[in-house]
Length: 204
Image (cartoon, rainbow, N blue to C red; front, side, top):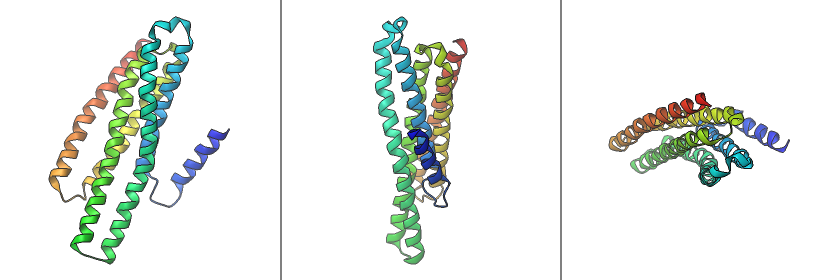
C-alpha cells in the first residue's frame, strides 16, 4: 500500500493551489509510468521459458526503459523548478523593470521550454521502444503495453503544450521557430510510433 500512499501524496501536490508542480510534471510522470509498465512486461516475458531466445533483446529493451524511466522522473522535478524560475523572474520584472531583468525572464522562459522538450523526446523514445516490446511481450500483457502507449503519447502531447506556451513569450524568434520546427518533426515520430505499436498489438 506504500505506493498508493505515495501516489496520493503526488496527486494532492498536483491539486493544491500552487502553480507547480503542474502539467509539465504530470506529463513527465505519465512518460515514467509508461516506461515502468514496459519494464514489467519485459520481466514477465523473460520469466517464460518459451521466450528464452528473446531474452537478450528483452534485457536490452529493459535497460533502455529503466534509463528512460529515471530520466523522466528527474524531468518531472526539473519541470517544476523551471516553472518556479519563470514565476520568480516575472515577479522581479514587475517590481524592478529593466533590460537585465527582462533578460533573466527570457532566459527562464527558454529553460522552461527546453525541459518539456526533453520530456517530449524521452516520451518518443518510450513509444518507439514500446513497438518492440509489443512484438516480443507475452500476449496476456498486451493491454499493459497498450496502456503504456497511451500514457507515453499523453506525456508527449502534454509536454508539447508546455513547450508551445513558453515559446509564445520568447522574443528570440529564431530560438522559438527552431523549437517549433522540432516539435513538428517529433509529432510525426509520435504518430508513426503509436500507429506501429497499435498495429502490432492488434495482431496479438
